[in-house]
Every structure is written in structure tokens, then in C-alpha cells.
Image (tube, rainbow, N blue to C red; front, side):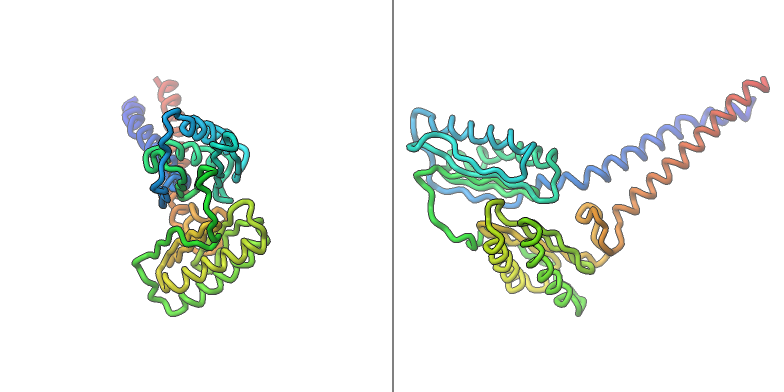
Length: 294
């Protein structure tokens, strides 16, 4: 009987450990999607809507409602709202590896963000890690090059391994051709490096290839041996990262090479939870056995 009571005293500790294990698993899984909403840059014109009828505000609101509605079904959608005199044109696009649910969540956060960061701007663009939206009033549409540089980030940390440039160049070459075969999106893993490239949804294969080539050249020339970099042109973007310890699962769902610290963490936690569950079953058996002895 005393042994049974001792076992029962362990029940709260066991349940606490199980709950903690589930929390760790949830946090590990949440980490894979939370970075899609990370802010990258904004591009807002200084010209603003000044009409007193609030027509543009209503048109812009209708425009965003249409985008948000379509984002649960499409990863790229382009439309024009309003009339010939007061129309607003634009599009949204999600990264090629986002599912419809994550795409919808990403796009849903953009209207309020645009209103805060680019209030009443006649033309604006917001880029998050997983999606972007761009609009402009028809009367302010300007001709611009699809190769125009909008934003660039080069990691301050530099590679120290001698083979870095060889690996980088091979990965760049792979994504350069892969983006044409992949309908405007490509994720290329080469050794310990991953490169992602994507073109605007309505860009043709040849123009897409030229745009990505231009972005890769900027990354090669201006980022040099930086461990990571991002280059956003008007009609495409490239992002690359070099991971000495292996490409993490949250960047590599297919696990193409390299060690994986996140995967190991989840495996350890799941194993621990399973062991605790088995221990809990044994405790119940001992408890029932104690009752029979009494």
C-alpha cells in the first residue's frame, strides 16, 4: 500500500512533464511558420490621395477585400478595382512553398500594415518574408524596369571556408535554370547552402530567367562572401543562406543534406514524451495492482 501511495505522489510530476513536452513540440512547430510574417521592406510613394469624397479609400478597401478573399485559393492574383477615372491596380503574391492557409494568413496581415506604413499613398508595396502586395492608382502608374533594385540585405557575417564561393556559384547556377522549369519558383539546395528564387506570377519564362540572373549577379558582386543575402528586384527576388551546421528543417522540408538541429529537438522531445506516457501506463497498472492487494 505504501508503495502505491508513493507511486501516486509522482502523478503530478509526470503530468507536468507531459504537458511541458507538448508545449515544446508546439513551439518547435510554430517556429516553422511564424517567420513568414516577418517584415522585409516597404516602398511608399510620397504622393497621397487628397480627394474629399473618400472614393479612393473605398476603392482601396474593396481592392484589399478582393485580394484577401482570393489568397485562400491562389498564390498570385492581379486585379483592377474602380472605374476608368479612379481605378486602382495591383496584385499579391505568396512564396511558392506556402500552402493556401499560410498564404491567406500572410496576406490578411498586409492591409492594416499598408494603412499604417503607407497611409493614403497612391502607390505602395509591402514585402514580408512569405508574401507581398503592390498597388498603384491608375493615373499614377509609371513605367519602370523589371530589373529595378528595390531592396538588398547582405549578412555582416562572412564565410571563412575556402570552398564557400564554389558552393555559392553552383547553387546560384542551379536556381538560375530551376526557376524557369519551376514555373517561376525554385528552392535549390547545394551542400550547406540553400537558394530561393521567385518571379512575379505573370512574368514569362525568359523574362523570369533574366530577372533572377540579374538578382544573383547583384548578390554575388555586392554581398560577396556574406553567409546570407536577399535581393529584391521589381519583378523577382532571390534569397540565399549558408548553414555550416546543416540546413534547418524550417528552411528545408525535404531535408536535402546537412544535419538538422530542429529535427533532432522534435525527435528527442517526442521520444521523451513517449517514454513518460509508457511510465504513466505502468503507474496505472501498479495502482490497480495495489487496490487488488488491499
